[in-house]
Image 1 (tube, rainbow over the protein chains, first blue to last red):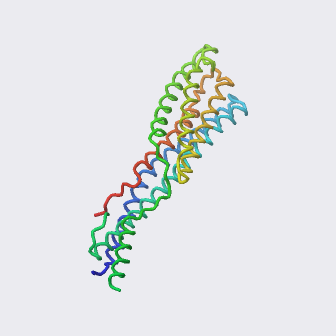
Image 2: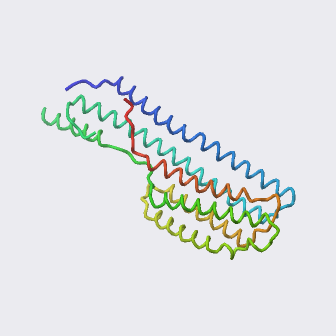
Image 3: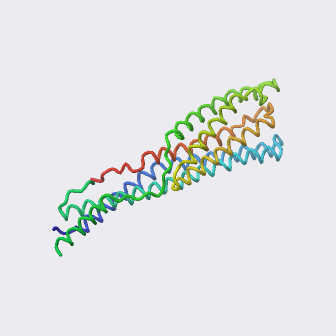
Length: 111
Length: 155
């Protein structure tokens, strides 16, 4: 039975985590930026209509409700992406550790 | 003794190699394709509606003229709710999103029912943008969930 190279395992796990987080951030950042900018623009547009007397309170409320619900969905997606990232990172680390252990034990495993 | 130790180590290795954790699920092909269709239908509807609120005819944007779109929308929402209901407990986020989307679309329907008058300078872009954001959010998470589990080797 061989010896586990902890240094190598930690190094591989770190690379895996960094890769997963990097992939997620690459996808997350432009999406979040676009959506937050969009909501700011929509709020500004509605404020302008209200200040100009174009729309009444009731219509403003109804249109803001759509914004609020849409923003909730955007925030839920961000939370979901965070969970997917955590899940992929943990699984990547488990795979590395599993491979290292099976290599040391010299047993063929269905990895 | 040695045999027992080897067995334990082998079992540990098997466990580690086959062990995966799941924090979130919720990808559903029907939800994914229905959302894409609904987004396309909504934008087509909004282009047609937008044309009627920027002209001088105060009657052509009446709700009744667009009833067909809302009927189809209702059918699609029923499909989404039905599929979401059957998702596992780890799909709570997707379920909430479908519920929110249902509320967004019904708020929009109620707004149209209450009348969308001709109004120069107010093209209702906030409504179009907001609803597209609500769709995009669910579609984006579906895309992320679809590719989950495809772990690429770091070597």
